[in-house]
Amino acid sequence: APSERPDVEAHRASLRVRRALIAPRRVLIVDDVVTRGATLLAAANCITEAWPDCEVRGFALVRTISPGEVENIRDPCTGLIERTA
Image (cartoon, helix red, strand yellow):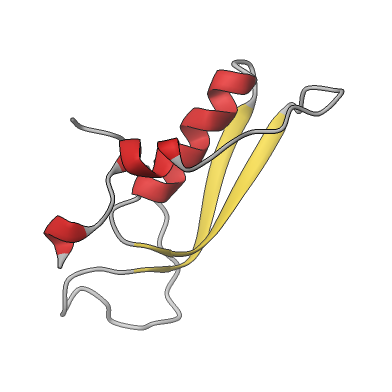
């Protein structure tokens, strides 16, 4: 159920960043499925805490959305996931 899904803080608590010898300029986070974006946001938070000047982007193969919003499964979807609370 949606109310039982982990939030950003729960995901963040389960993640660690192992710092590289050289700070990355850009990082791409790859996820299989995005529902609310909590996992992507938590991973992005970890990376920006470790490397504040790093550009972080995310990619997911599938974005789950409400029924009726997809006309073609092959249509790409782009957008911004932001934490609101």
